[in-house]
Amino acid sequence: MKLHHWIAAAVLALAATLSQAAYYVWETVTLSLSTGASCGNGTPYRFFINRTPFNRHYALTFEGGGACWDQDSCEGKGDYSASNPGGIPSDYMFQANAAAGGLVTPFSARTDPFQSVRTQSWNLVYLPYCTGDVHSGNTVRIYSDTDPAAPRVQYHAGQANIRAAADWLRRKEGRPGQLLMTGFSAGGVGATTNYAVVRDTLAPKGKTTLLADSGPLFNAPRGGDPALYPSLPLHDTIRAAWGLDDAGSLIPVLKAKMPALDENNMGSLAPTLARRYPKDRFGYMAYQEDMIFSGFSYTDFYDDISQAPNDAVRRARLNARWRQDLNGWLPLLASAPNVSYHIPFYRSFNDAHCLSIVDFSNTGIEEAGLADLTPFINNALDRKPPLRTVEADQVSDLSRPMSAAMTILAIVLDFFG
Image (cartoon, rainbow, N blue to C red; front, top):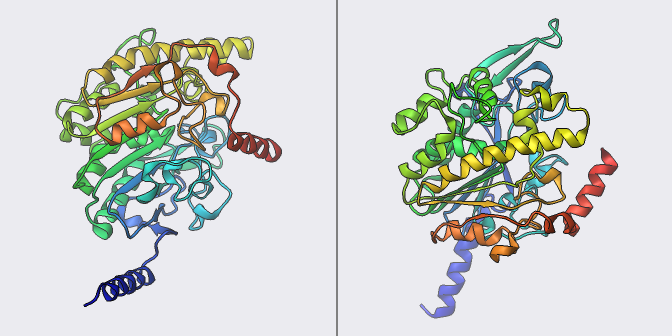
């Protein structure tokens, strides 16, 4: 057969393949309630997949958005409350919502007008968040502290959702080539807590990477002193509220997979994962001035914060505890040879919470020659020696302007807010 005949045959084969499968569009996957998966209000859990015919690599993005352990926050009321309390509609990826059609982060965008990242050419999976438990709970709670006559029945089913989604992906899509798990805020926590279960279920053939953005599990040993471990009251609260220690739940499941895990300290998970999967790469990122995750972590547990005389004092007290937790966390990360971290000072968007949303502007650590987050990401994907950088400059970031994309988004949010 002549060369042009081979080319014609290849083109026809590709056309036939494309005509038989949905590529480059978001497909909705609705999981059966029989799997245990559900949103917080008991409706079915849905996730979304955007395929490509050109490789077998998969990038999984865990959505962020608050958390809850009382009635108001589980119903989506107040600061730091749970997102999507009404569940995930089948057209979620096509609505003007937090996912923004995948544009909320470059990791979930097939074609992003604001920011490129290598994994945009991979198969993309978007895992929404609707359980108020950072994708990690395994219990049902009835919250009636605000309105006893109309209690909130909350299905903290985050763990079942991710487990069922991973089972579906393995059954329908097979084993990935390379695999990236990433997430922002609550999704950064969820990508970390579910890493072992998802990785073992999908059994990727190639490189596997975790990039967890602004969802740290800080060092907080049970029975410790909150003056030394500021996140300890939060950890104690969520372990009880979300059933994390119950049989078949997060902590026992992880302990069975990784006997070296200190089940009395969720902060031990990151270095334990790194040692359990020594060929994988793990990257963690956060801003030193993050006021969202710190507010979630400490406000309900420290009177000097919740009763601060003014906002400036409140923010200073939040940041003092946040930096104390960061300083205790980074040595744990550095104890494993395959872990990186990237801790810039500040950016004037979203109260310095999350580096990987919208675009990577103002995510750099310029004094280290890192203009933005891209070298950190590629370093992890390429298996290079880990980058561990904490920005010393506490001034320059304060005057860096927002990118055009973030400026437009801020205007839109202000208009509709």
